[in-house]
Image 1 (spheres, rainbow, N blue to C red):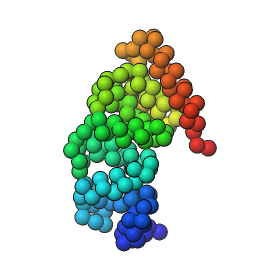
Image 2: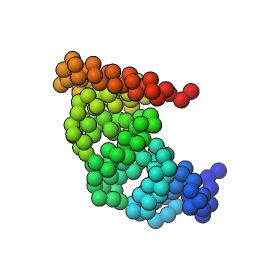
Image 3: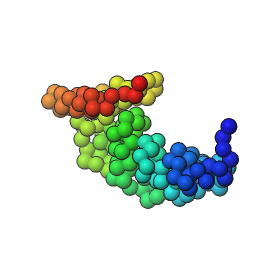
Image 4: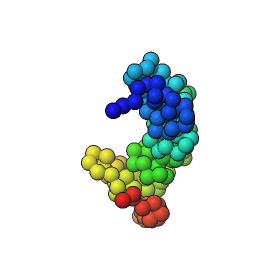
Length: 165
């Protein structure tokens, strides 16, 4: 059973990152509260600063598109990277896209390929298919040395971050 808004708010105010994340989503979507992106960002940021990957990813998206905050691609990259480093596949795909397009970072095919490759190796279904497509598109414009470097980086990252059982 879902806690009521007052209980959820109390949990969030006491520092519960999951409650903060859920409350951010309620404000973003206007579920049970008046919709407000500024308030959504406030709650997402509190959860993200505690290391909650889902909140870091959503906050990155809000910066990428200017939802409740000024649009800031570099800040989006910062939040996507924090979530991606925790193995959060959606953030890894977003970070790959930022490197692919050069938004918020210097365009870098090696980094783009590495992040897409990680998603392709760990995700399933449509997320995996999209990562494979993106990875393969980037690979077409890479040299053999760049491709080898991207694969080495992905392998090293993968070894340093084993999947949760």
